[in-house]
Image (tube, rainbow over all chains, first blue to last red; front, side):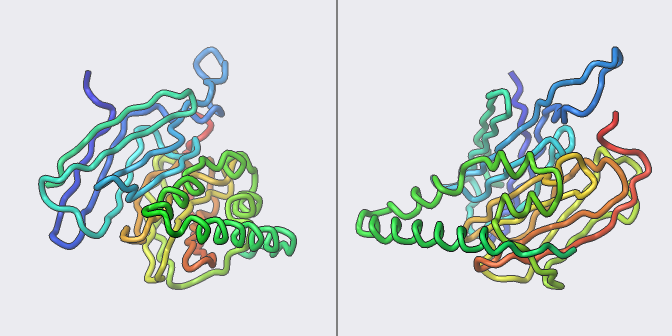
Length: 103
Length: 164
């Protein structure tokens, strides 16, 4: 099955720039469907990026993060060909994990 | 954006910090104990802060103290957002020792939108996309060297992102 996580990690030598795009509805719990019923909240709560066994970036998200969330950050170090592990967990306990190669 | 300082919370924060420091010193001679202990204390999802209604309450719940406005925090957000469901917002700062960056949208039902932990070695710069219910302020809080700095920008929203 295709992963919900798309990530591009690019090393410039000194730093690694990471861009991630995740497929997730990020339902806020404030929106009604066509029948007028509230769509219950369903959103990613925590997204973690690990490099070399350490967290390099941890996102705590509420339902105000846009649908199919995007995030960009950079960290010092990271070599081409190294692994970057990305995982998320949502408010219903669902998770997904992917390991990407730094380019 | 000014937030009244709360003496009680500030004191409690200091006491908690003291306790953590003592705990860390106590574990100091076990190799690598510091990093996991710090991560464990830091990795908890701040449920209460995300449930807070106002930006002031969310900041208080998340950090236990108030922030001061700083021109070293560069907040980049559009003047006008045509679609409140997807507002690109980014922040960067020249401040040193940044440990976290948080985004708040004051007019949303719950002000806190996202909070990022910035471990040592990660650059204090984040870009993301947030929902905005209507025109209002976007506030970004940068925690650096144990102090809080903020920047605020008003974004005009043509179509809200929360009402569907």
